[in-house]
Amino acid sequence: MESFMGLTFERFVESDILKLSDIMKRAFDEDTRIHLGQNSGGPPGYDNGDFMREWYLHEGVSAFTISKDGTYIGAIALWINQNNENYLGNMFLDPDYQNKGLGTVVWKYVEQKYPDTEKWKTLCKLHRSVSP
Image (cartoon, rainbow, N blue to C red; front, side, top):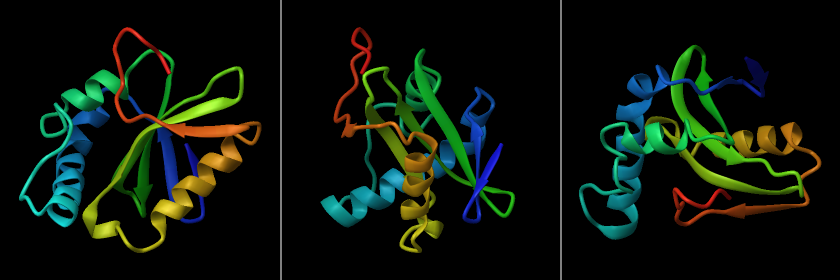
């Protein structure tokens, strides 16, 4: 467990899926509502834990839960590579905690945790057969 600027980060484990499934669903649904004008939507499995089961427990991932004041508020999945070109696979925060600067705090945590990173990339689509 690591604390950083009022947030707590812990390694993601399988039992976290149940704790975070509703938060992930609400986060994606909120983004879909804001950006697409639809009531719900997200990647396959975002609404039942399958997305986290596949990618947050993926071999090679560095995934963390994010808590504030003892309450789970989200999670982040990263791939850290030996060539120092690393990937942000996914990050989500509970809509009740969005637009409060916490995403910036999460990213500052990532940057201080992996200071040797030369380039950060995002993944639009992950493929089971190809690791980032």
